[in-house]
Structures are given as structure tokens and as C-alpha cells.
Length: 214
Image (tube, rainbow, N blue to C red; front, side):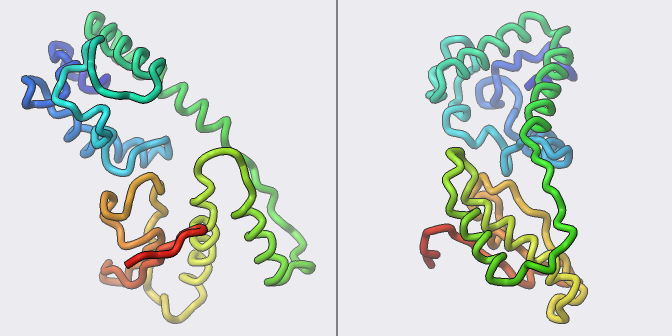
């Protein structure tokens, strides 16, 4: 919405849907914003933030917006920010820069440097499997642990692609954000391998502590 306000200062960005006399925020997000955030390696939805039910109601984002955004302080900050930018359109780009700067700062602060093992003489398959199992099942007291097995298998596939004849001329699709269902992200599984004709060759669905249903 801030990007759109920067490019179209006269647009009332509180009216985020064409059906309520505004613009299609969802289409802009899907076509431009989300792909750009993903390309920059910043937090992004699988397709569009407007798919969230609390944001997709056909009501303008005024201070009395009825959408049930779970965190009250987040809702107030969001609506007040949009209201302020709407009243100060010349500040839209500045606010956008500040928000992106904070996102980049927070993203960088959560990165962890992993020390590469120089001497792997003491490693064997059993030790590696035990380490992975402990890693997968450890309670890190935060969300995202279900992606740990996916990361491990993706690393394995990165090696398989290079060394196994079965995957000759194949490519490994970039790992998705793991925030949406396969149906929403239009993927066949958590890990996807494509052949030389860019057709799906193999897909892997990984569950941690859950059975895979049909």
C-alpha cells in the first residue's frame, strides 16, 4: 500500500479493493511486492498477504476497520500508520524506507553463522542421524521447527543432484517459504526436482511427527 501511495499520491489507499471503489491491493501484492520481497530474501507470504481473512474483508482500512487482526497492538499500529500516510502522502516513501530498514535489521539479527566442520574423520552416518534426530525433536520454544527436516533433506538433495545418475540434467527448485499449503503455493511437495524440460520429475513431502495422508 505504501508503494502504491508513493506512485499514486492521489489514491486513497485505505480502499484496498476495486469493489469498494479503490485499487486491487491483492493483485499488486501478488504480481510485484511479494515476488520482490522473496527475491530480496525478506519475510514474505507464499502468494499474497491479502489472502489472510482478517485483511480481505471488503471494508476500507479506516480506524474502525472490523477485521479480526489477532494482536490488538498490531492492528492499531497498522490502521494508524495507513491513516497517517493517507493524510501525509508525501511521507509514504519515507515510511516505506523505515519499515524495510527495520525488516532488514530484524532479518539480519536472526541469522546464525554456522561453523563448517573442517575435519570430518570422526563423522559417520549413525552420528549424523543421531544429531539430526536430536535437532528435529529439540524444543526451541519458537515456531518453524517443522521446517528443520525439510532443510536437512533439501541439503541432501543438493548433493544427490550433483552426484547421482538418476538426477542427471535435473534441477532442484528453490526452497519455498514453508508458510502456505501445497495447494495454495501450487507445489507438489516440500522438495521438487525438475528435469531438463522443466517438467516435474520428483517431489518429496516431509512431515515431522505426522502421517502423510492421501
